[in-house]
Figure (cartoon, rainbow, N blue to C red):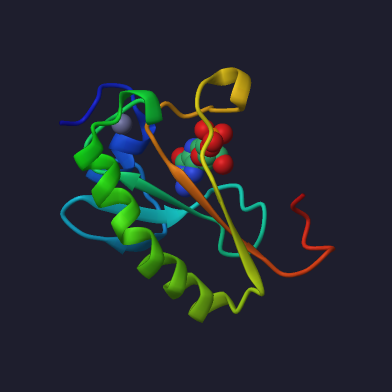
Length: 115
Ligand code: 5GP
Ligand code: ZN
């Protein structure tokens, strides 16, 4: 169920355009609008959930089940030499969009701009 005023729900619904990386019935993945490194991708459940604290196990399960395949697709496309997975929960931990998301951040070496 889409959550009113949630930009990621609007992205899932196509109301806000995004660069799709992967989609199935449970999960949507798209390029972050502000790439910290080339190929920086966000993976989100299609079910609106605010963050990890409010996420039912079955929603988290489906989300994490897809991540290896998505990470592998990013690896094939961008040829990074490493990748960080990152998840921010609540404002003091830098969460700025309140729809659960996992950052996949490809890494290219010491001077790739992300630390
Ligand atoms: P957070 O800070 O909540 O962990 O991450 C939110 C991420 O969403 C940020 O990296 C930000 O660049 C990204 N973001 C915010 N608005 C949009 C948008 O409209 N489109 C896309 N593709 N990414 C967005
Ligand atoms: Zn949402």
